[in-house]
Image (cartoon, rainbow, N blue to C red; front, side, top):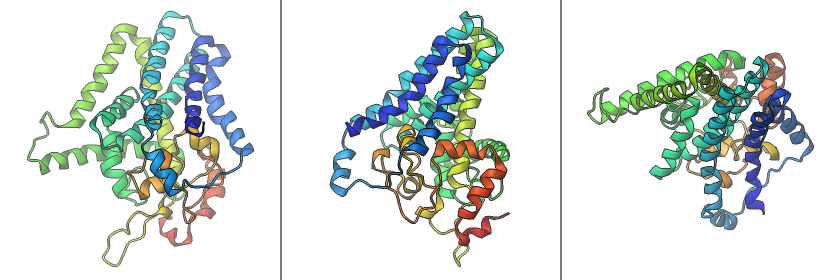
Amino acid sequence: MKDLKYLAAFTIPLAAFISLQYRGYLSYITPFYAFVVIPVLELMFPIDNTNVSENESESLKTKKIFDWLLYLNLPIVYGLLIFGLFTISTTALETYEFIGLILSIGIVLGVNGINVAHELGHRQTTNERFLGKALLLPALYMHFYIEHNYGHHLHAATKEDPATARYNQSVYSFWFTSVFRQYVSAWKIQKKLLINNNLSATSLKNDMLWYAFLQLFYLAIITFFFGTTGFIFALFSAISGFILLETVNYIEHYGLLRLKTKSGRYERVKEIHSWNSNHVIGRIVLYELTRHSDHHYKTSKKYQLLDCHDESPQMPFGYPTSMVLSLIPPLWFKIMNKRIPKEMNLAKS
């Protein structure tokens, strides 16, 4: 039964289904569940900092159930998106209902879309990476695959990384800097990859061009079948989804900085360069994303194998709760600034 605990991740889509089915004030049940109910549950459940044993690790590594729990998100995400498009195009909705449904689908695109795509994007098989990119499509964030794998994991916890929040930077400022800098960074990485293979920017192997085309085609198809209302729904659901991702990015490395060695290069990424959380509910709903320190330390590890490291800086709350707190910058700074390791004070800028 322990292997099935990650089924809890599907409570987010379930809430979104209820929003679409019943509408009215229930249109907001998904954000209420994600950012009120889950944080309360996190405060009620004990922190679990135990790690799997070496024997357990070998067994868990090969269990396909953990992979299928990821793959199942693809039909769920697209099914809810299509359900949402049919709902908004065939039902007379109040403005508040329309906004609530956008937020509900946006949360699904962020949690069960981008978050799962992140896990699959680190896999070695082409099929799994394809599934990951397919999950990024409705969030209009396909460039994330390039920037995250070839940029963020190289530059995390440095000032060169768009997805690392500076000391005393508000989440609202970070949304803008991270979104635009990551997109520019993805193009720069793509250009470098093409040059290394003696290919031009117009090559069919330019993934960034394919991503732009696929995302525009996706929006065009939605507009053709569901009109302007469908386009607005898809666009703002996508924005809600990637803003959710960027809020997670914000809390994952906030204020942390890799120091430079005598040679002038940054020290290698260690367990101390990402915020860790062992709050049980957030861990299982987010497929262990909260054990982010170990993910950066060993990027090839599957989510069910991620460990907690004592030396990692610990968040006082789970990720869902921390995301809510980040929306109140003075409170966030008061809680988090004193937790940043003293040797990283150079991050203050």
